[in-house]
Image (cartoon, rainbow, N blue to C red; front, side, top):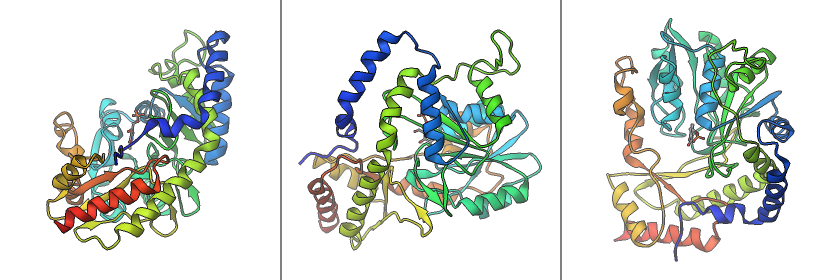
Length: 371
Ligand SMILES: Cc1ncc(COP(=O)(O)O)c(C=O)c1O
């Protein structure tokens, strides 16, 4: 039985007719740039997160860039980032000339380790980027306490965790700014690249809106050094059709995760991901840890049995050639992050997966450890 790591068709098939109808109207409308379709999507998205403002942008990467630019992060500033995350979390900091400060992650939930952050925060530190990795939120209250104590901006990286909650707070609603991605594999996956920034502060919203369009509050008047960070109307319209169904998709992801946990709980040699009490996991990824240097062999074994899996992430960001010389771990290496890079393996968990496919994945994993 073939099982893909992610099957895009099963995720979108139920809405094909709606998408086609929208697309037909869209190409005839001639309104392709930031029209009311975008505004309606933004309002619906803000409502779904429980925040005041949402601003559609061109990608999750650009959401981070717009947020950092809006908060005035620049050369000489330090930003606390986990070293175990997708490249864009930190590259967006470095591209503005600021310094990523690598913070370790917890082995239990893959999110930023605030004890490590405590010894790395300093006079130059302006912001922290908690990344809600693999679909689970960081501890909202703990990050809020930490940021308040050190007077830091919080930029939530919600690319992988739309719909997650922690301490009764929805991810993307409690930082100064929240950054979402609609890359096709995300909880709300688009049809190309798109992203969005959330916030509650009107002043930040007005500035972010300018930065999205070349820093321009009025045409040909450039107050800030912005860019073209606009979301396509086409993406916004298609995403608006999917948005009401995202909760359903998360519900199915949660059921898939429960099934994995039930079937894999006594397999030796692996550590299962867990939902931390008080937090709602959205399971954008189901990432196990494979102990005793067996990860690559297990991945190859699954592949031989036509089961897809993925390694997010095989190399931590502190070791990336382009970031090495322009970032710092302040003399404390991020050891758990390094360990995870050699252990993690993400199994298929997308909503279109069948129970038979999950059973097959679990049986194959069991078989690997029995051999
Ligand atoms: C944690 C994280 N941050 C940022 C991004 C960047 O999003 P995008 O690919 O939409 O630019 C991603 C995308 O994979 C991500 O996983």
